[in-house]
Length: 157
Image (cartoon, rainbow, N blue to C red; front, side, top):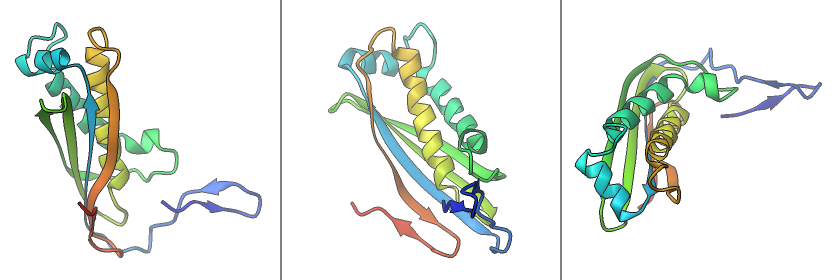
């Protein structure tokens, strides 16, 4: 997002009113690393607080929808699709979160996808911190975006 400074130094939102509405899509991902026993607890569904990944999925969706309330200069967007997917990675004792966010509008949804991943992973941390305070959130990144003037972009493998 571009930030413009006025002559007085005040920050203002970028005007996207003249940009054409197009289908915008962004995919972001990140991981939370933990003790093997914590991953086993999540996988078994035996956590005392309930379905860890189900709650984290809902939190990620809510975060995407509320991004403009969290990031001061983000535009409020009407999202057409939000998907949060989790993959257990036993070899690294981690959970990978991937968020896909879509809209039809005049600005992109990269920040919404990144916010969804971060809050999804923070929710896993919150639900599991009593059994594993050493969890580490890592590698949050944009994977792909499409739509708008800049077109398609994909992270190199």
